[in-house]
Image (cartoon, rainbow, N blue to C red; front, side):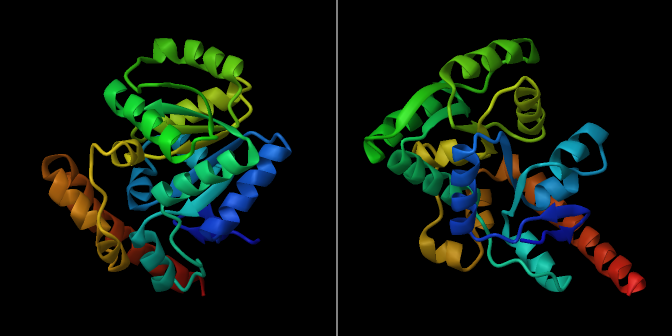
Length: 248
């Protein structure tokens, strides 16, 4: 399926269901994969560090995760079928892993959060093979040890609940170390799925206002990202539109 160029990033025009099927294919064929959800925050993060830009642009599967990206695609006359929300995709992948006998590893968040997450996932997916987990509070000097642990556990799927850009650097490091897995950065999904943070009700999600629900839960932490970040993203969107029109 031909990729769609948005803000210099080649986004895969996939539905959630298609993404799950593609991931299954990658696991069966033992293809190490960086599965990345593109959103406004990642667009805003481009141009600051060359290494980060290269990691994002070279991700193996890039989904449109975020209402802002879907709106931008429409504004720029690009065809993206739907938003592939990271937290929903993660749960679909866990369901697929349980059904097909694939193994998983959880990396990130506070110890209490990730351990509670594991307990909850064991209850929700009783046949799921969880081969390991650890919190996200470690320095770069521990990356090699964690990489070695992953090689010993040999998970098919590794979910990383660490904030950007650290998780992108970490995934890139693991893959360069020869870890063969599907690596997916899931942001704050561990906090939600563990029950530490409540997710917006379905009716709020349907109105595309889940971001506001999240902001109301953590206003101090998310103010700069959502409000200043959204303004920056809108400016980038109009610049992209103007650039596209000049080319036409």
